[in-house]
Amino acid sequence: MERIFCTLAGLFALVFTAIAAPAVAQEDRQVPSGSEPYVYEVDQLNPGLAAPGEPLELDTPQALLESFFAAAEAGEWERAATALDMTNLSPRQQGMQAENLAAMMYEIANRSIAITWADLPDRPDAVDTAASNKNPMAGAERRHITLAYLKLDRRSVPVSIARLQEPGGEPVWMFSRQSVGNLPELYERFGPTDFELSLPNTLRQQAFWTLAWWEVIAIPLVLLLAFLAAILTYKAIGAGKKRCDEDSMGGRILRAVQMPVTLLALAGSFAIMRNVLFTFSGPVEDLLGPLQLTLIVIAIGAIIVTVVEAMLDLATDRNASKIEKPENEQSRDFYTQASAIRRLIIVLVMVAGIGIVLVQSNITQTLGFSLLAGAGVLGLVLAFAARKVLGDIMASMQIAFAKTARIGDAVYYEDQWCYVEKIGFTHLRLRTWDDRRVMAPVAEFVGSSFENWTKQEPALIMRIPVYLDHRADVEALRKKLMSFVEDADDIIKKEEAKLEVIDHTPQAMVARACLWAKDPKVGWTMHCRVREFLLKTATQMDAAAGNEPAPAFMPREREVRIDEAMGRQQD
Image (tube, rainbow, N blue to C red):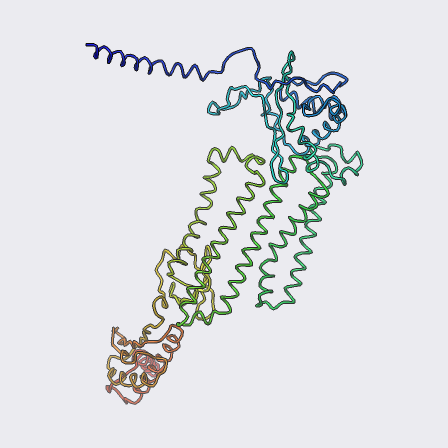
């Protein structure tokens, strides 16, 4: 009985715990309601400052920035300095450096930070009322907000504001002491250059948007100089190409890198002038920085890819006749694998370039792509756009590694005899026997049937059909052919040579000679020579046969029609 009672008591306790647990957890998740604000407590705020005039409005993040910018633009630097938390400085240093630090902060905030005023809270507790309920910070008070990250040489430095309170005082929002401590280093990197400081005051006044007058003039001027540098680079490489043989290594490399190096000269000269002479304002910097980096990465990647392509193409072209020879199967394997490695290098360069641009430029934040990326829309768009390209890349890699067609192989594709010259990402370049170039899409080439005449061994049977009269003596013609085969050096496996009647039509019977050739190139020449011999021999035997109805070799349909036509004319 006691055991039963204990068991029931245990079950009751478990049920009670299960019912009470959600309520307790819910109670724990609630933000405690109290009169104490969510702040950083400090002993004293800027005791070394005695700013004249009306104090700044620092009760909300938006009010902080608005009043700071208003005081700075009015030239009231000592008053604007009250928005900076200078706790790390002694009272004496605060008084001495206040104006200078305020001017630095204004230059950094005005020139290098794109402030989205609509997203800046205008509440003392900085609660984001527009945040989704899925956001973990939705409805929560904040005492620290990061405005932007500015990249220095080896690290990214945040520029942030914080909510502070000294004993007995009201909570205020100020630029954080860490941001104030980083101001000298940030100003050296993002502040105006010596050239800008030497400009007249009128040119440094704001024109429109966030652009100063000197920026309105400098941007097109810098672009013009960059284009001039690109044109000079293009002409210099063009002059170098003329001095080199087109088929030499130097000539091919210069021809391949002319456009990428020109693009690099354009982006590089623009970057040098932008970093040495000018430092543009925040929104302009956010646009030009990623664009400049993208162009430089594209140019460097294109240089690497084009140089590799030029070297491999040169090696392939110089050895094309050797690669096509039957005994050079290992060379065909080598150049095909080298082509596949080249495509892997291209893919790796592309992926590395995209990664560098995304990491270094922080493009998902500066250009507002984070919303699209978060929703998955950007990924879907890129996946759809890259679907065909990725399919072609995989198809070309499949050809290279499966070796269904190697560089130098003889293939029969769409009723044309061709040699594989190049296997690219999207197309195969095929050279026909008469030196035409067939560009076969990779996807179609892989998805259709084709004959590879050099896959296992280059030797192949050449089939030569001829049309004979139904009364022709095939055995006599066969003996003539066998005698021809015995004396021919380009025919192998002579014992397997044969002449057979394979079909007949109302006009003629079809005989076919089957002969072995050591490779397709020799086989084609032999094919033409044997056909010529058969037609010549049949014609000679036909002429020696005399009048009808003696054995005839050549079909008579055309001769009969001529005779009939001549008879009608005489009548």
